[in-house]
Image 1 (tube, rainbow, N blue to C red):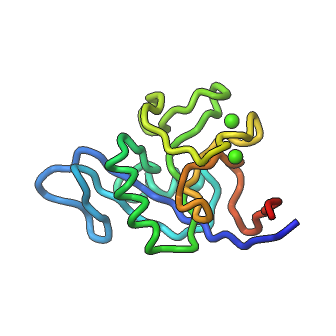
Image 2: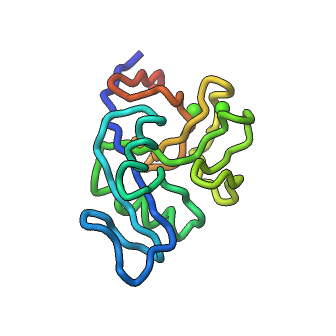
Length: 150
Ligand SMILES: [Ca+2]
Ligand SMILES: [Ca+2]
């Protein structure tokens, strides 16, 4: 068993911004604003942080275009792993976006994921899998992450 230190960040989004642009420190892409926060927190704390910052939410990914943009940015922040606003806490196996309750149409699961059943109901862009999506316990704050792989 190998212990790997994983740094975790949170990714806030605001959709439908107007011509006034994004707030300072936020990044604009295709009608949304993004904030990359490097706070080592669990899912609920991460969502709370986003709400406290300009009324954002943990990110909601609508398309491959948006996902590719985000992943290209996250590669600049290695070795961080990032929370997104996707959860199946309400109905196991039904993945919904936390900001509006929509069922996810686009997903980018790492092969073999999601695999955690009732024990894993929140989702991260996982750095060791080049930011493919992985389900993980919502209370995980990644201060120590056990990698049982080779
Ligand atoms: Ca689950
Ligand atoms: Ca998993």
